Image (cartoon, rainbow, N blue to C red; front, side, top):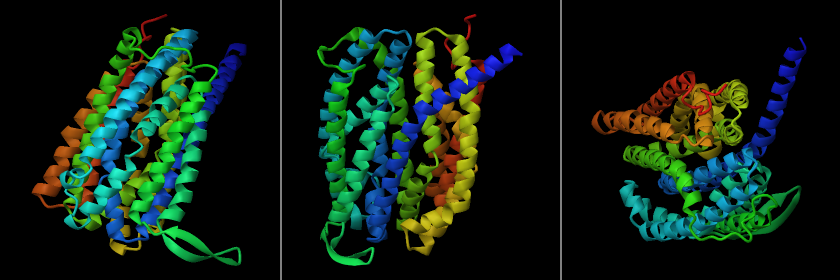
Length: 463
């Protein structure tokens, strides 16, 4: 009886640790999504063309952010393992290498994104009438690429060390700046009534380009903020460490990062191809797809917040070579995440039309977006399971497994299926999202096999 009570107490302790790590990431992502909602609503008020111009290149953002985020995962696995083993000196050395990688990758992506900004809308098959606007939006958005890179990689470094609150604070600051500047830069100077008082609100009247400028300034501030915080951090500050390449650290980090980068690059490239085929269907489909993606992202927040905590705790258990803790972590995470995704999926199904109505006044866009959102809502619990097992694999450095699963699902199911449906058979957005759901269900099948076989756990053969 005493052992049983002790086991329950330990499980409750594990729940508290999970929630302590996860809630700041959930809040951070919720804030980011809230700002996406506000951005989309503000730009949507300018018309369907403005929404399409902003959304037409949004999948390229996933491609770039995903590739950079993959490098962060390499450092996450290394630092979490070092912290689990109690080797803080090794963790600090790895952070200095993260600084080096940030500088190199930030400069490289700045050159690439700005140099290709005029070509990307053409490659994405954006309507000719909005290509110039889409190109200008993209150029402005990626001017602060170096600080954006710092925000992504340094945020992951801090989470790996168990500090999920600092990235949350940075994210909140970035989002507040973004929203305030949106109000000032998107609209013309206008009379405003607030709490019974009327006054003239300044507005630059830059429209879509104002939204881009607001985001760019916010990203720049966020990158500087998180760099200063990391430099002063008591556990993982790179102060005093050399930023010369150290292959003893870079090699294992890259061994984890490269498959994850290939996965994210391959899947993000798939998102680009997916969006390009949707853009070719027409302006209504592009607008509905853009808004539905924004709406849907809010309902994945609990799952992805938990994924970060899962990766950190799995890496800690691996570093400590504690197989019992590894198994207990998985046993606690899976029912929590699946339960959360059941709730969020149900909420998405019920609220889809109302949420679409926030961002568009077009009945066609609202109707089409509501249909695809209700379709994907039914698959959320299955996707939640996939998210959490992928988190375990990232934390222990086995990123080659998610790479294989996601590439097969993206290109073997989603892209080929969408090409057949939209380009050969002439079907519309609903068929494309059906292919996306089939991709998610395939991932669920592959990850549940991986979990049952135990290939996610490098300590499974330990006593």
